[in-house]
Image (spheres, chains in turn purple, cyan):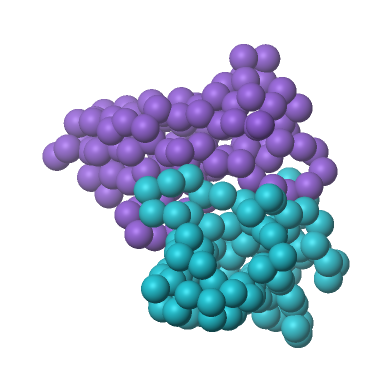
Length: 112
Length: 113
């Protein structure tokens, strides 16, 4: 079974600090990787997508992908209380097809 | 900004009843999905739909489930005979191309009593 694993947290981060979230996946053939933010009782909101090895930056967010290690991470710089949410890692296991496999999410708490 | 919209936001139904969850995907998107999330659990894939047919479905998507695109804008999920364990948040999502970003609607909370 194709798995996506995340530390459930909570990850407690002081306001203004960097939050670092990790995700590992089991299907070596995975091609597309996504980070979603989910507030309690709400739907997943897309933050970042990454398709090739290396870093991708978008505002305060940086996604990092290492396919050899089957590892994807998300950095949140200058964390704000509004960043407090559950962050979901999602993987598209194949080049063709669109099924996303989600991790269980990491809960982030940003403390003022 | 374009968004996926879902109706209703909440649905309470009796066990054994049929429910239809409705979604309007983003207008220029070609791929449509249903996911569900049981309270406290992972988001789970149910089905993907492209070119008016199912392109992939999970083990969860058994004979009690069906999807339809009845017109050019709506995408529906029908659950024929609901069970208690069908209680969950159901999310519709859409994407423009294969393997690219999927955008989620706000969800329908289904409660089966």
